[in-house]
Image: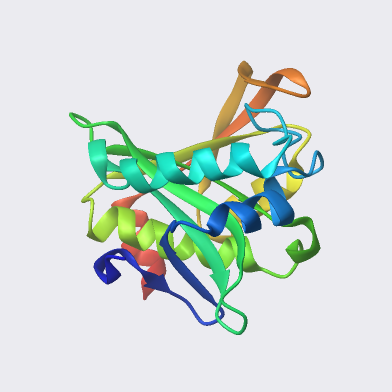
Length: 186
């Protein structure tokens, strides 16, 4: 594992996926329809699907400026979720992120903590100027996470994406600029 791409927060380690993580991905989040409700893929039907996804994540990490991190609790080192960031526009230095987390870890501040580390990575290591994401208008908890890290609401995207389980979703667009992030660090 390349430790250069390992990020650490107070309670979490964000690292590239490793072989063997598929079992945890399946057990802890990817097979749960509550976790995948607003995502573009179906809940994983078996651990083989999760293993295949992990292999793809391992192969693709860092290629085309795309980074998918496995979220692990420091105490147990067990994978509990995933967070990614990728360059959406090379010319404009714009990145996008997404995340998901085991349902039994919700409401503990883990995603806020992980997202802060990924924003720092995006601005300092990838040299992005703007990082953005959207969430379903029905997934208000995701919007609260974005607000907690200093992101600004920009507007509503009508049928902005299609959830596998819920269909087309209106979504709220949030962003943060490098200059805003640096100001928030003080």
